Image 1 (cartoon, rainbow, N blue to C red):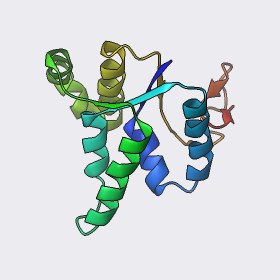
Image 2 (cartoon, rainbow, N blue to C red; image 1 turned 180 degrees about the horizontal axis):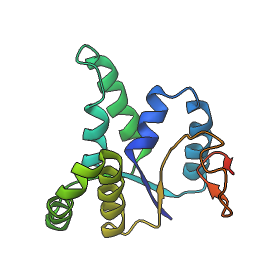
Image 3 (cartoon, rainbow, N blue to C red; image 1 turned 30 degrees about the vertical axis):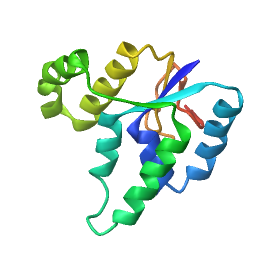
Image 4 (cartoon, rainbow, N blue to C red; image 1 turned 120 degrees about the vertical axis):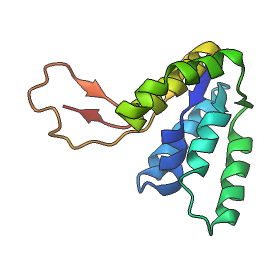
Amino acid sequence: MKIYISSSVWKALLWNEENKKILPILESYIHEHHQLYTSVYSVLNVFSEFPKDQKEKERSFLHLVNEIVEEILSFDKETLEILAGNVHTANVTSLFHLLSVESSTALLSGMEEVLYFETAKENLFPESKLPLRNLFRKMN
C-alpha cells in the first residue's frame, strides 16, 4: 500500500507531546511493507516552522524523512496547476489550503492513504451524531 505522510504528521513528530503514539504506527506500516511517501511541499511546510537558529534540527528532520520514506515526491506540472488553482483557498484558511494541496498531491501520485495528525477538544462537536475519528483517538 502506498501511504502519503502529511506535514501535520511530521510536525507532530517534532513538536507534539503525543509523538510517542505516532512512531509505533509508522513502524507498523514499515514492518507491514507499506511504502511511505511525502512531498517537497510537505517538507518545505515543516521547514517553514523551524526557528532560524535550529539548523541542526532541520538536518535531523531531513535525515528522519529520508530514513522513513521511499521517495520525496517533487513538483510536477499537475501539482503546480493545483497550487495555482488553490490560491484562493490560501486566503480562506491556511490549514484548508495545506490539506487541499497535500491531498491532491497524494491523489495524483497514486497514494492509497494519507496520514494526517490533528488534535481537538473532546467537546468540539457536542451534538454530532456521526462519530469522527482521527489517527489516534475517537472524538465524539
